Length: 215
Image 1: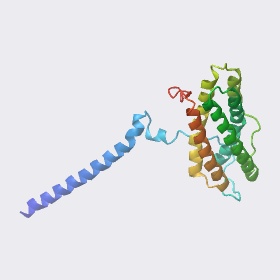
Image 2: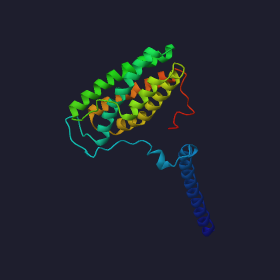
Image 3: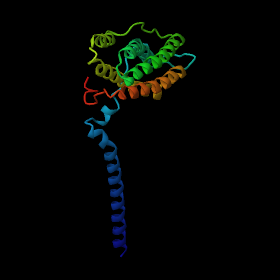
């Protein structure tokens, strides 16, 4: 009788252990399923955002440690303003609809403030900042300059929306990881500004989501 009870108890414990293991496996599968549905591995999903490493390592400042990621972020905020403010001013003038002109207004206002803050951060943290757009950004401005009136709204929305979407991930990573209070403050402002710009660009009705991440 004791043997039967002992075997029964052992069997019960085995079943319970099996159920716990099965539940854990099911939970893990549920967590990974959304990633797999998008055609990515779990490791790929956590490594889609990167930054340019200037090789300067981490230095101490009165605002906290300053990393290569922090410096790259401040530079990219500055670079964004150097081409998106002219693009915004152009949209204010060339926009044939209120939505395009509104997007231009938001770009000019938002990047004027972000540019001021990035210059302030660069001076305080000793980060050399660019004074002109990159060759790629100049190319985008060139495309907008040469676009016909019919082509302009769609090209404006596509170029600016794609640019904002790419930087959005970097802003989130910096806001999550930085230990520098000045960089964190800039990331807070950039986050709200870029989200606003994404919204007004989409409100133009000219963003093609089928091709948005094709390049």
